Image (tube, rainbow, N blue to C red):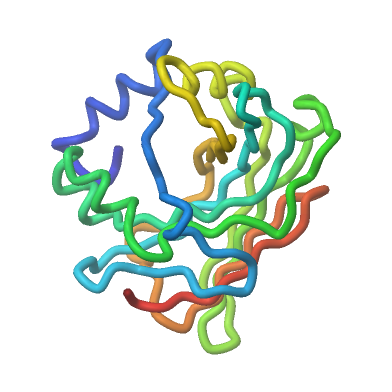
Length: 196
């Protein structure tokens, strides 16, 4: 909500609504894995990583595994107008997932996990933050059910649950930065940053 006065009331309303905010983040060809470079847009001046728990859904919409995601976002583009959200979120290398799909834990077990983010620039940590998966407001099953309403995912889907760690407004990612996201019990997703 801090990105834009124009968009603030819309975000405020969606956090309290029954229907969650869900949108397309990335087509498979826009996704990178551990060790690959994530992208920041060359026409944006304010880019941030968003460390998120990933719910891995099967073709029936059931949560079958968990992973780590980095929802790289261009906050200045999104903040200028909510209708620019697809441009702020979907572009080359805009999303990283990994290092594995963890099968077996219950929602209760995963909610006990910590999410940690650190960003290194020239061998110095320029930002670090931590939150808990338990800060998520909605249940995993509810998010999956909303995503699968009126649509099918014959190959399954990866649903990012939202971030609780955002660097301060004065911070932006730069080419060469290394983003490290850890979720206890799942592992570490690490990617360097490049301009696309």
